[in-house]
Length: 115
Image (cartoon, rainbow, N blue to C red; front, side, top):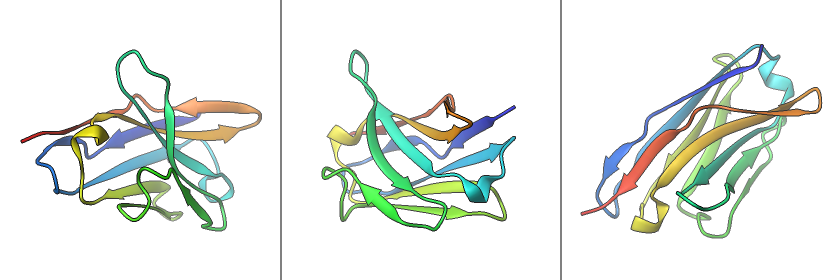
């Protein structure tokens, strides 16, 4: 069974940084793309960043030059380093992957950016 567990969220002031982690189990992690989404109440989930099995990365325009996605295949973990955070980055951040035609999600970790 695929299991994704996020951690690292919290409250931070504008301009601050956070590093999110997502530990995966139940898959051969190194073979699968990994995604970070975020969601605010009443809105759809938006793709923030993705990283393929060969470490090719892509980002939403709103986070380019501020966020960096990376992966550690030995620890089966994907990271999202978030710098220069802004109030509009406030959201629940969710980790996701595709496996055998299905998309799997973690429960998410809350990020709040406020002074």
